[in-house]
Image (tube, rainbow, N blue to C red; front, side):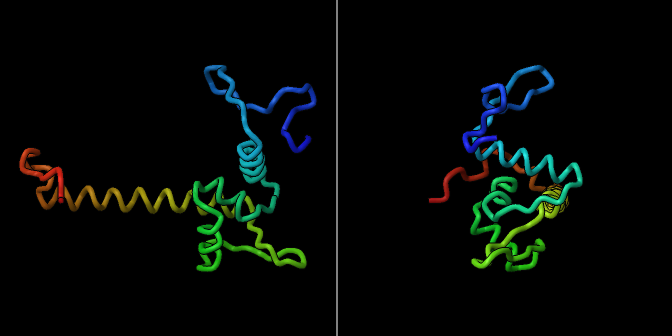
Length: 130
């Protein structure tokens, strides 16, 4: 593959939905898809903070903060000491985060229901605070 992400037949890479519709991928999206597939195939592929950020939908700086906080394991590579994180670690973190988010939202819904927040007349709720 070249850096412009064209396939051997000259086409841009794409993913195909269940409906047969092709979604063509740019360079960054192509790298993310490769990383995710590697993680699910069991192959241990190391990602940069930028690549991990693309998978998680956050900035590379946020991934660096997550690594500093120990939320994901990483290792430093090369003379420059760039941090690398395994694709499987990123996918596992994403799954843990989704489960925690769902748990917290469920708890918030229960609290709102128990406190009667769903019983309020919608007209009595202010739409502007300033």
